[in-house]
Length: 168
Ligand code: PNS
Image (cartoon, rainbow, N blue to C red; front, side, top):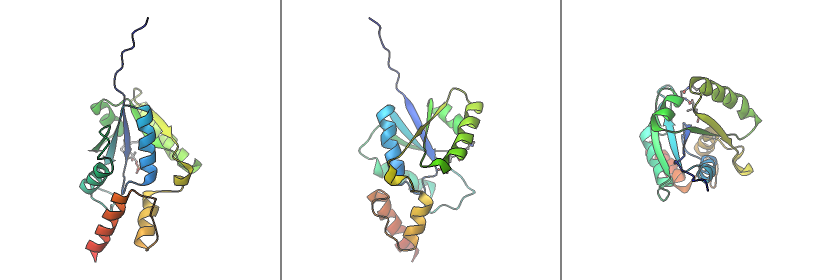
């Protein structure tokens, strides 16, 4: 009889998450079905002008996953593969919505492999109903008064309303 030794698998799910959408939530759920834990890693990027600060995004994602201890939320700057190595993650999870995502994702995955061959990129497809969804579109539609119910977690909708009301 062979003895199997299980070492916990940790996947990193990196991105901007400004804000997290139901497409991201779907990918995290799929990640949890394959890996023991998923760390949502928010890129600290001073160049972009985000709607939510990094601290707000951390808080929002923690709220969304409050009942799931296998989801952790963290921030990183610098190279993603260095961050993954530092936290002991052997996998980077990325969502692929459409063929249009492929070229950029392919380039990143191969560059990351060149930088750190021990970290594997795994692509997961969200449910078709989220295949057109992006944080950018969600923000635009919300800011122009469109209905985004069902496209983001209720926590995000609340924070979007708070942000808009606070801005007035
Ligand atoms: O949600 P996004 O904006 O598509 O996420 C992009 C992200 C954060 C995955 C990417 O920009 C990234 O990994 N940045 C960290 C810097 C880095 O490692 N660059 C080299 C990638 S090949």
